[in-house]
Structure formats: C-alpha cells, structure tokens
Length: 70
Image 1 (tube, rainbow, N blue to C red):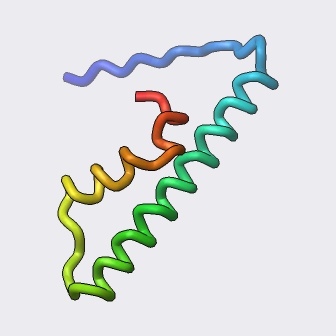
Image 2 (cartoon, rainbow, N blue to C red):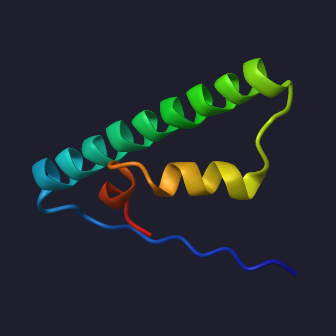
C-alpha cells in the first residue's frame, strides 16, 4: 500500500520568492565553480581527486558559503 499526498500552495509574494531563488541558484553555481576548480587544480598537481572532507573544508571557507541556507 502506498500513500501519496499533494499540497497546493499559492505564492503571494512571487517577486520576492523568485529573487531569493535566483540568488540561491547564483550562489550555488559559484560554489560549484569553486569546487570544480579546486578539484581540477588538485588533480593537475597530485593526480588525485580531493576527498569529501577536504573539498567540504575548502567550500566552507569560501565567502559565498554563508549565502546559502542550511
């Protein structure tokens, strides 16, 4: 047996929500670029891909990290 629930909502402040989502998307894309660049530099230097913890530490130190929600 499977239960499926659907919710319908109305966004009353569409402009604000749209702007917020645009900002989050832009920030995420910048962090993606930072992570990709870091991994490529590491690969070119050592021939190894950085592990998960090392990459997270690099991203958490970036100025854009605090722009994202948890």
